[in-house]
Picture (cartoon, rainbow, N blue to C red):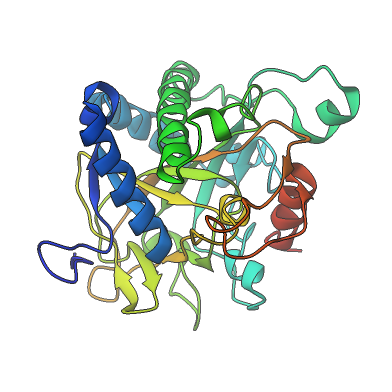
Length: 328
């Protein structure tokens, strides 16, 4: 896949090694924070290595999930969920382009979707944002793998959020103090070939053009011709850079709003199965970092922030966004 580097020395989407951040000296940390700040002002994306997440865990999780996705539709239907729920999102459930006001055909994917595993004390919050995760009986190893993976994602998210706080020149707990009981989401997205989804319609994608809604997204992806593209003002739509060891990190709308639009929510899409490789099959592991329900998100003032948005309740905002991409 093509690189998004404007030159070999100044990539618009840089790769950040977290090891010097965790154990490095003050100068090394300051350099990393500056690189992050510059990258999030342009494309809203980073690649992150040195994260310590075992590659074999990611591979085993994909294998277990694929065993579910290839089951008969009638079997999978028993686990059907709505967008924002827990379970299986079948074909036609989502159209992410809707969030931009574009009436695209439904996205060409299926998903297994999970979320925060502990209930909340407030009954109203519980009713809105908590339900037990659904674990398909046909894939008994999936739960243990998911729970191990999500524990690693929670740790990585906290490292990233502390880094983001310092990248803004703020205290490292500026974001993490709002993550005591987050409503994180986790999607395993399956992008099969045309023998499963059929020929793409005009304007149809595996995932339509959109920005994510929350704080930080941690993506483990696979390279493919029908893979991830990101949008920048300088280059338009371009293939995202790929490193099999790295996680792809982007910020969402809520984080951009929090920073007073200093940072941009990374606009992206996933291309449909390519005409010259129609059987291409990809799978992405997507962790959506969120904050504790009821968090008041107020734009960081100038000179750090650039636009002063009205304060919003984080989860009123998120629910409106999730409803916007639900088909039907």
